[in-house]
Image (cartoon, rainbow, N blue to C red; front, side, top):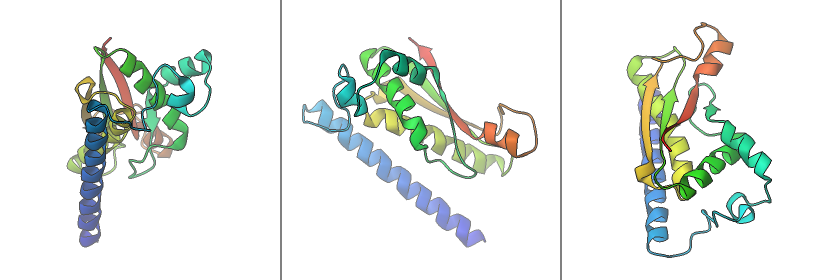
Length: 172
């Protein structure tokens, strides 16, 4: 059992390093003026989202700032991607805007484990924003682990609400 946790930790570290390298490489390409198909045109919703999007739909996506995760998971669901893309588009058009991405967990697990898991959740959202072209200087990441629950219950419905990452606008 202990070996399994160690291997999972090593794998998570390797994945984080690879994602960070990918993000930094793409950001570097964009800064040198090279083309990157990930970001697309900010003003053109077809290029940015991959489909035509109404202003109303974009507002709905921007209204969402909390993203939920499965037990012991830090992968962002497909249904949350467009909302995160909308936040990316807003941040790109307002380069002085700063956000904080907060990672949270449910109450199960040690404090240290939950801090690390909350950080992976927050970084997963931050990495998507940077892949779409948001500047690293606009994003800070913090993990609260299990210290700031959204729900105080001790059952699956409460735990589901507490496994989350939240985008908080600090300076607009």
